[in-house]
Length: 144
Length: 301
Image (cartoon, rainbow over all chains, first blue to last red; front, side, top):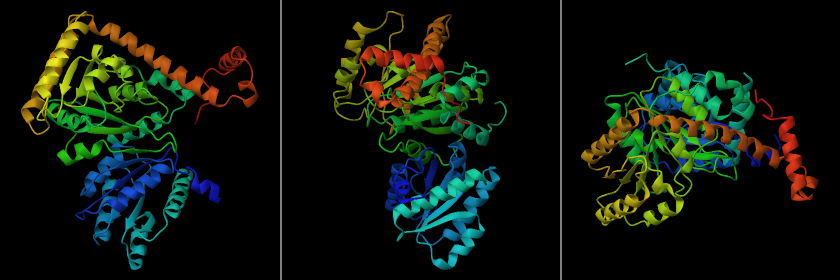
């Protein structure tokens, strides 16, 4: 993908759920990412704060999304991501692309990858790169 | 209740239908007969509290029915993207509620509804709900379209916003089956109610239904019960012989017009620059000929 495409609307036609699992109450990051994804052409469903993994999976299924992004700043990303992945499997929705954003230490990336997470976006990452990587992940999910 | 809802199947089907091209829709219509599930619409200007009210109403009615809900939010004309936030209010109310809520982006529609909405509603009809709620985009003056898509239409207003004049200009005062004065704990609610009653005494009643004015506050469950009862009364009135037939004809007309308008808009967008410098009558003929040669356009998949 060249730069011009990356700055355009590579997520057009995609539906993406941005969710805040667990107890941390800081959602400015999630809202900024939601807006950036909207500007890249995506239809973004935002859940609001403090949703359980089961609720998030249910919303993803009802909304027929292509991807679920979890914003986690609390440090409980290992448990929460594992639970969301499990709930998605239970709803016959393991094919929905899962990505994670927030404060995720490098040593946990391999574990999250093993749960099927297709993108890990830490808070220091430029938003254009988040969009480009997500678009690439969704394109490869479409091809699969 | 009937069979359990296939949420995964319905979720996927609605996503595919939202993306369907004009030709796709035409190919699918045999699978999408228009059903007979009662539909209730909530419309009104932005900020009057439609989402919160719709959430409370859905939970109230879900006690005795299986409720499906479509909530429309606007698509950004710049990026084609959208932020769909209508479900935040409902999800805050009840974590494990069994209401099926689907957020819809308006896409190219500018009438308060969304592309392929008749098809999305037909899929909801077929999914096994007892009742479908529809919440429109809050545009305030362009909600005539929703009239044809629902059986009972509630216009949501709030005190102190100059809503009555706006609603009169838009003509929606003549279209609503009930008026809801939301945030009725704010000053001016009683006055607004009286004003609406005076206006609509002149406007409606040709068909014998006198639209009631219901005062609601999401902080008072009794008012939500009263709104629900008013909806039931309108549904009963409709159920009396013949009242639905005209509505169904309008619904079919809207469905046809929506598809054709979208196809014409596609063709206008793809017209050659040099055609646009021709006389208007020549442009018109060129477009009509293109439409005749490829009425439905391409399938998308």
